[in-house]
Image (tube, rainbow, N blue to C red; front, side, top):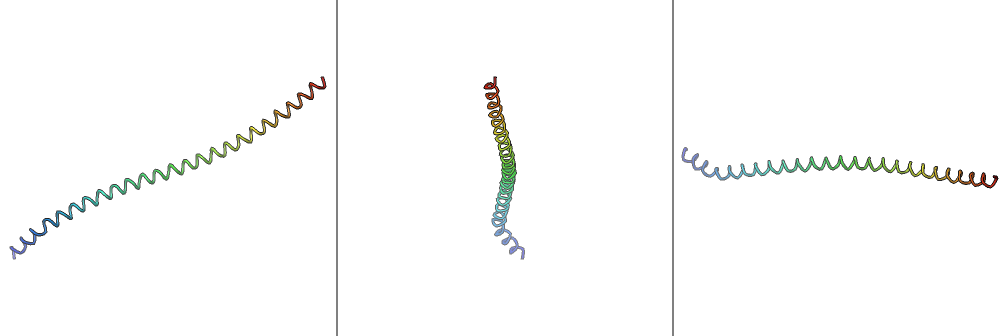
Length: 89
């Protein structure tokens, strides 16, 4: 019986070695997947923040354009009033 166990152990050594190598490769692959997953999450967060910033800038730009239009209208009004005043003098 001992000879059979020794022969079996002898045959299993390469298989055990292969299993250990596969386990190591799998662990490395899992580490890489976790790393890529973390980077992907970071990229999603950055993209979301960039979208929020872009929307805020768009809103600010719209407000500023409206303010410029209001100022231009006021300038035209005051310019017209000033000319009328000059004509009266």
